[in-house]
Image (cartoon, rainbow, N blue to C red; front, side, top):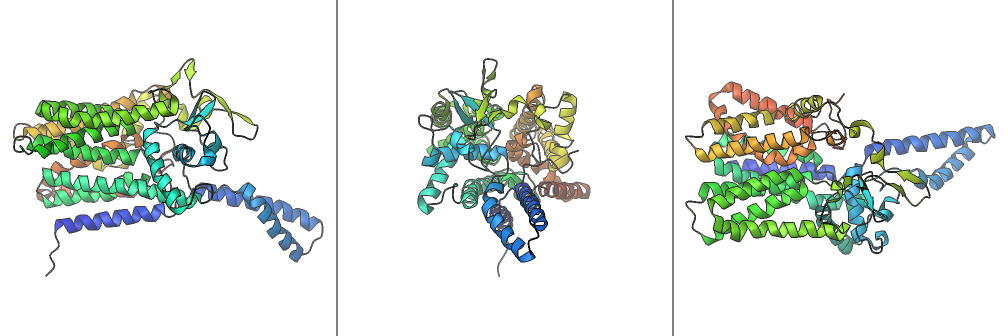
Length: 495
């Protein structure tokens, strides 16, 4: 008789989540652009039909002219595109410039001048220096994603110029589905390491598969899902190091130090505030076993550092990332440009609008980031239980110092990162732009999922905790599902 184990439940969760994400990637399209396109078509046709009626043409003649007119003008009026925002188009512009020969700028391989001149590929997330336009994104991650696009181009012959929807969907799936699988698997390994409670294990795995905004953002090329994936790997590695260091003399155990160094450093590549996470892991590794840290952790982070600074230098002739060049006299965001049509335009960042102008009140900003329209806890109330879980581990420090240390680590990372963003100057207090949640906190999700464990363990003996966890999971899934077609929209509770 077939016996269902908890692992089978995990597999069902993962298959369902991956299938849902792949289904959404398969139909990636900016539906706002589709609506605009249909409106423009209809308005143009209505104007022509009115003229033809005044000329006294018959219905058959008008229909014939209408079809011919649409065939001639549709390419000029089309606004459909597979990218969902200026954010992902910025990354795609860099990727296309690296891979497509027709999009390359001689002497400036990372310049995107030719790409943004193409209809539907413009972006506001760009900088200018040395006479050329560049993506404002740190170049290492898009460079790696360009490798995926290069494989697609050279195996299928498709390019974004001729097959934009097919290429974008394929590269997005090949980039993000592995990240999701890594996130799911590492979450399972971590939770199994930290608890034997079946409900706690199943609840955390169900939460990572359905209850976060990481699956929502998986349909758009961005840095947040890769960041969460690498954090989940380095978190599992440090849990193994801390909880097993006294019992493991196997020389191969040094590989966990290597994984901690490699992936925590790559988290910094994806999210600069993850530097605090990297530093904390470095301290722990060297305190636990400095020899293994030198042999494993240090080489791992040096590999990433070489790639990060090397890619920056190759792209911009400096090791400093493009978004850091905002000082007077060297402001890469203050420029004018020509998209190839002879029209001189100002950089968007010279005349910001909407949320990009920044929230004037830091108190209002903090409120909205925590419990307001972009609220970490109002949109995903699961994380309130995570904070409680970290506190529970800390309060039980004496009975289990390692779990107490883990709770302190998770809580301190949360405070440091959220505090960092709240204390940013006016120009940066923009909630991450037009986005369905406070996306800059997403890389902390593996930590928050882990901190759910002590609360879920107590659900067995407390019906109120059980009801609260289910209600929080329900609300979190509901909120994450409101932006399935495009995560680059305001939260559903935004006013």
